[in-house]
Image (cartoon, rainbow, N blue to C red; front, top):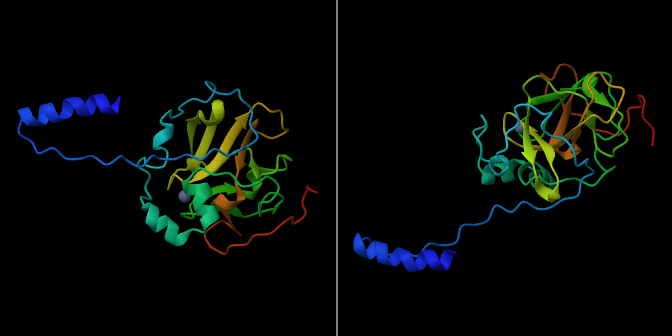
Length: 210
Ligand SMILES: [Zn+2]
């Protein structure tokens, strides 16, 4: 395809007397394939989905930091997950079995409040699970990678990848949805989220056991 174009381009540029210049191949936006448990149905049920998956990381989110700026503030693993749509290994995350009675989970990148402790439930899936988010904090995108249709969730403030959301699994939660979120995408703040006092840790003991 490209070579055919190049055969035409010099001709055109001669005609309009533009200098011919070599175009370097643009770097591909490599989306690394990761494994993540998922349920390959879903979909149309999710109203208002953006299908603009490829622009997830470049859409106009309020926090427009560049890749270099993110690398400067994130750990390599946070960068891989938040900015490159990676997935942490199951049952390894700091907040997988974290079950505080109060507090707020914020975006590990931009610190925007995303979920409260009351949204979290024990799904047993290997990642932190929430049945809902703080209103407007999370944006959904259709994700057709890995040969299946899933709903990706990202931070509405910075576009950082959080995980995926699944519906209709039958968990006894107020909303039958499971936001399956990477721990590495999150920070935890005690209180109402204003204090910025971060605290991590396994199992503070409520309701879950290994
Ligand atoms: Zn964010």
